[in-house]
Image 1 (cartoon, helix red, strand yellow):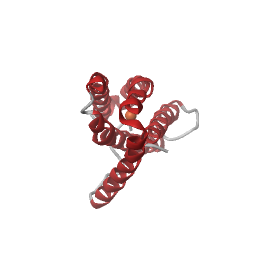
Image 2 (cartoon, protein in one colour):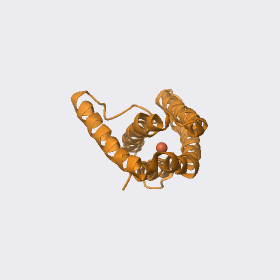
Image 3 (tube, protein in one colour):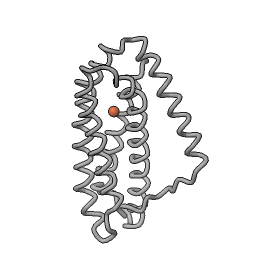
Length: 171
Ligand SMILES: [Fe+2]
């Protein structure tokens, strides 16, 4: 397995988490407002954490490795813009006022899903093949370890600081 495959696995996981969250909101299973709010909040927390970690790791490894290659620059810039857009939507969800959280969240989750889908296609169909071409197999295999190392360093840092379980959104 190489670094690109690790990033692709993250993409699958992220899209799955977004889907789960959207399905949970439209689920017919009987739950009290408080129960469903708590569950939604927990799931959103997990999605947010996974997504932010992925974007951060990608910028520190793949994007950084591609920095010196002129023919990859335009694609990397577009992916940076995708990251920024995804981050903006995440922040909008976090900032929803309490009284409009439920309705507002559905629209914003759809926006997030679309942004992530568009970004995943750009990376998997364009950026990753370009990275394979310019970086080569050996570098991509090395990147596997860079990604794993960055993930484990982040988990160590996270365990040292307080991370709230609930983000207080979409209740
Ligand atoms: Fe990605």
